[in-house]
Image 1 (cartoon, rainbow, N blue to C red):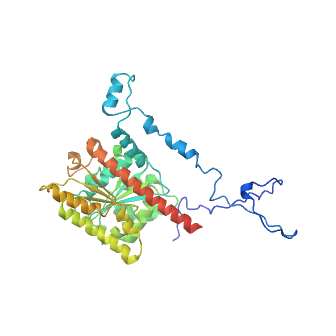
Image 2: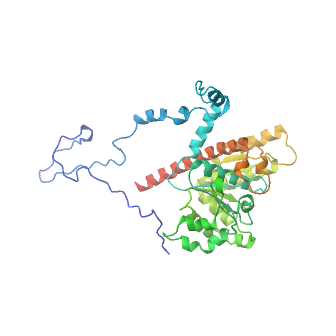
Image 3: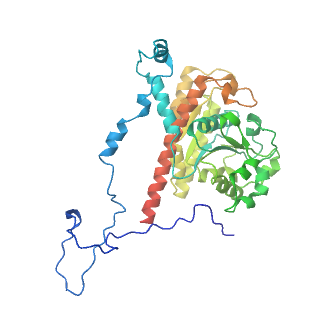
Length: 391
């Protein structure tokens, strides 16, 4: 069945010749004069100037001025001793904003970026119990609250995921299986966001939605690559940022299907040997997939990956061993970010972002900004490739 999506009716751009309207003869612009050998009077070739690659206003001069007008530098301090001093002096004394506050403002600006298409973040780690779902909820809350766009956390566990346990159900019992049963009705141009929301669970003040895995393991096994791709196509029409919380089987069809459409890989881990070895084996698998197929997508995901170091329980690991494990991870990925322990993230039950303390919130803002940088790079790469193909 051929399906026409909303917005896919874009027509190819038409090249407009500046001479189509046959204006009165005027002196040509010196920049566009083309010297040619004299031709016969009966055949005068018309010169068409294509300005698609050379706009009249390129911004080469004005952009430098605009970059200096950063509102983050102009706003008064809102935190720290700088804000306190400004408050007690009724604004008579207004110190410059501190470095920490400026860094946070820059991170929030990065999170608010808009891309040319929906973007997917994949949270993956073969070992369970290292914080995949916790990190997915943290990223969903951070992007949901600060980006101003539609964010979805999708529990793509091949068995029974825990996103439904760690998020607010809002009296809903519907899962991805229920959505799959009616998916054909959303594969039309008349489908609406309000109808899709019936199958997801909105998280209120946390400002993101969740598509939870089914509680029946046999049903979840039935969701393979084709089912994943159909669901992904539908949710991509209504959500800007899709955060896929994955299971532990890196060879399952729905896990591999998620890799194919992922723009940014996020790897949660503790600094324990079994967790780091598990993460590195997944990294090796992705790199080998590129070597075997000749497709650089998988190794690019690894090179651009963001590792979130969570604080697991159990026996403590020595500082020397932690440093060794960090070094092994850092050699394979783009950046490591520590997520400090927070009791509100470790209840084993619903994570309410309003109860999470500032250190953990700030760590997820930093992580989300790094993820946004990766999304921007992926978006630019695909946009550049598309332009090259269309030429």
